[in-house]
Length: 399
Image (cartoon, rainbow, N blue to C red; front, side):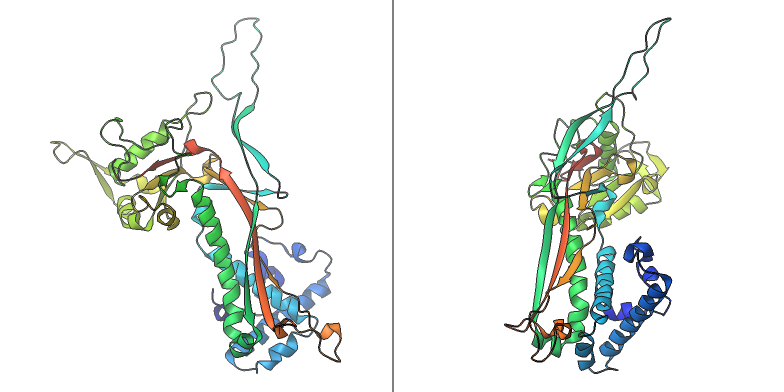
């Protein structure tokens, strides 16, 4: 969202703290548990006044030097930070993050490795026959194939000069948070995609003969890696439906995500949005025509990083994943607890005007040595493959 669009849509009631953050799932108490009603009302009024003030600066109704003067007051920098954070969060939420459709989202307490287990088994297989006066057999819940990962810190600085601030204050105020928000989502998307995609195709450590998640033709003979088509999707569903858990029980995957690169978007949409499907070879004397049941079973996501990471067959490879809502996700992406979204920082000034106290330090006047102004974004996340049998892939080249 552009900065001008953001502040143009604010009315007095919309600029309240609760209204600003309600859509992101935050409660008012989380923003200030010690605030009483009078303090909250005061903060609401000041926040609205700040947005209105910035709008007047942006539209030229106020001179630029008013902003410089305002940055020396005690309240404005904090309120200005709220507006910038809200803008960054809006850009972060708005950018498409398709990995969330196939991944479990978790939080971790610190930077140390965390161990996760998947595919818990025991107690849910077929019941044993119990004969008269025979003791019931015990079952125990255990986990196989635990995996570990740890979160890492990602970030970037955006320095610019005091001269740029003076010459083009509007663009710098609106662009940096939007760019930081998009960079955070792009970093997540690239990281998540690289867990199951390599430069040579679907990851050879995820899609293996042992995991039985390589898409081949239904009879296993004619060709592997079928191209995206009705027949290819049929083969993909066959692969997923044949998967069993550690005890040999069938795995029920009700919702499926079809993930494709941009080059296959039209083909995928044509398949999923067709009103009818014609099944059978073109030489068959009898062909089956049926309603397109796939559009109610399959969710399509287009991921441009599939072809950017996979430089070998990135324009033809496609993937079928169990939806995250099914409880057997392919991935887990974890965020540091309390830091689930990107944070923006501004370098504290180290200059004091001659004759002025510390309270008069103006952050927009820049660094003492070079008048530089510096923003920073920080984002903390990590992740791992959870359950490879919850996904199937085809290189799409028929080899």
